[in-house]
Image: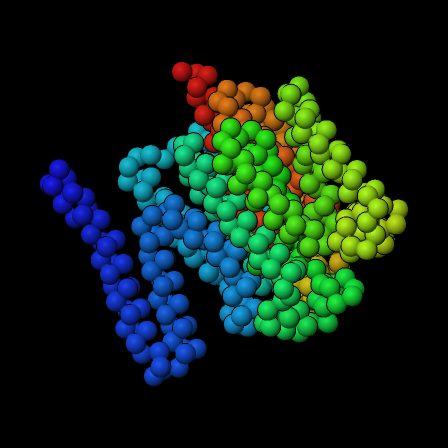
Length: 484
C-alpha cells in the first residue's frame, strides 16, 4: 500500500513540482505588491496563475477544456473591469489549443486514435465548414486579410471545441460532469444578472454602458431601466444563454428521481428564467417556448410530458393575459408574441429585402467579417460595412454567399436528423434524457439564428459545439452496442 502511494507520488511529481513553483512565485509577488504598485502586482500575479493554468492544461487536456470554457464566461467582465485593449479572446484560445495538442500527443502515444467517428455526417460538415471558411481567404469581394483572420480564428476555435468534446464524452460520467458544470456556471451568471436588476450596475459596468451612445440606446428600456447582461458580451447573448440552459435544466428537472436534485434544479431554473426576463431579449423568450414545444413533440406519448405540457400552457396563458400592466419586463415578454406590432422585426425584414439582390449576385458573399461593426473596423470601404445583419442566417448569406447559406442550412438539417435518430435508437435511459435535452437546446439555437447570431458568441459556442459532439459520441456508442 505504501509502495503504491510512493509510486503514485513520483508519477505525479512534475505536476506537484509545477504547482509548488507557481505557489512560491505567487507568494513572492504578493510580498512585493506594495513596492511595485497594486495594479502591476495584481497583473503580474494573474499572469503567473494563468501560465500555471496553461501548463496544467497541457498536462491534462480535460482541465484545459474547462478552463477555456470558464474564461469564456469571464473575459467580458475582465474587459469591463480592466478596460484593456489586449485581445482577451486569447485567454480562451491558448488553453484550448494546448489541450488539443496534449490530446493528440496522448492518443498517439497510447495508440488510441479512433478514426471511425470521423465518418459521421456532423464531423464531415464540421470539416466542410472549416474548409469553406478557409477558401474565403481568396474571395474576390473581400480585400482584408485581417477581416478574414478575425472570423477564421473563431471557426478554428469552434472546431477545437468540437474535437475536444468529442474525446471528452467517452463515458457517462464525463457527460454528466459537463452538464453539471455548464448548468452550475450558468446558474451563477443568472444570479449575477439578478443582482444587476435588484441592486443596479456596478460603477465599472455603468461606465461601460454609458461609454458608447449606441450601446446605451440599445440597452435602455425606459424609466432608468437597462437590459441586463450579467457576465456576457451583451443582453442578447445573456438572454439566449439563459434560455438554452433553462431548456436543458427544465428537461432534467422533469426526469430527475431525486427530491434534492428536483428542488435544486427548480431553484436554478427560477434564477435563469429571471435572467431571461431581465435581459430584455425577445428572441430568448420565444425560443424557450420553441424548445418546450420540440420536447413535447418528441415525447408526446409520455405521461410526464402531458402533465408538463398542461402546466406550461397554463403558466404561459397566465403570463400573457394576467391583469398586470405596470411591470416593464412582463410587458416586454408579451410584446414578443405580438408579431405584427414588433417594430424591430419589421426593420429587420426591410433590411433583408434591401440586401437580397446583393446575395443573389454574390454566390460566395462579400467575405468574412465584412458586415456590421466588424466590417466597419476591418473593411470600412466595403459595401457591407456597417450593414446590420441581425441574424446568423443573414450574416452567413451576405458574407459567405448563398452557397455558404446552403451549407449552413444543410448542416443544421443533418444535426437534427442525426440527433433524432440517435435519440430513438438509444436504450440507456440517462443518455436518452441528455440527448432529449441537447436536441431541444440545439433546436432553440437554430431557431434563434433567425433573429440573432446565437451559436457564435462566447461562451454560447461551447454549449452548441459540445452538444454536437455529444450526438456523435452517443450515436457511435449505439452503433458499437448494436454490432457487438
